[in-house]
Image: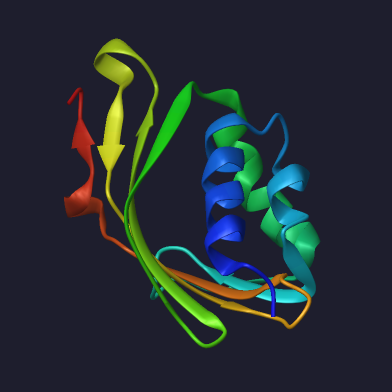
Length: 122
């Protein structure tokens, strides 16, 4: 089994610094699913996942890990994402739940948050 905490750290680094959605999607298995936020239609496969993350790459952003719990091949973690600048700045602290393959790729990701959790200009 891979070092899940290292993969989570790499994920957060890429969410903050990747220049393309494909960079983040490379952490996912080819047939992975992403549900962000939970309750929205799941994206399937690295192409759809890359398109989801591509939106982030046009904004200034930073991430900070707040808590991480690993059990078996799963991880749950809360983190802070700050994106944009000035009046366009938003802050959110989602809780992500990920499962991992034996070779360390993300096989599923579910993000727990809602629009009410987004703070503007904070």
